[in-house]
Image (cartoon, rainbow, N blue to C red):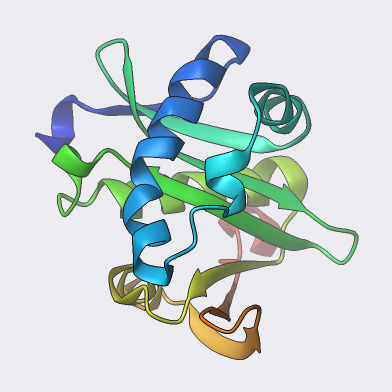
Length: 166
């Protein structure tokens, strides 16, 4: 199944599909924390279009359908901030999340000179935390956001590019 899915940069035409997929994918997260006011569920199409224009957004496609997405930016100290990694529920647990994560890391490093990556996950989001740990991320802190939610910050260093050492 994973071999027929392609990963590429998102385009402005993908905005509506990404937003609908985001809404679908964040329902279980909202239920887990009993909070349906989380930003991924309240984000507007215009705000998503702004992210498409400013950040590094990668999508996974199965034919013309967007079945996964992830976003990233790089701050002034070279830290790639990775967010909103989503995979359609029917395609989860087939390695697509890891492929999207690797794709956004690669683009953040080659196109925006990221030297490390940082992402966040809810403390009860075990499948997310497991995915990130399996891709080399380590917890570096926890911040209590609400009575029900603590965000775990995870980081890893960017791989050194072979061209940089040659």
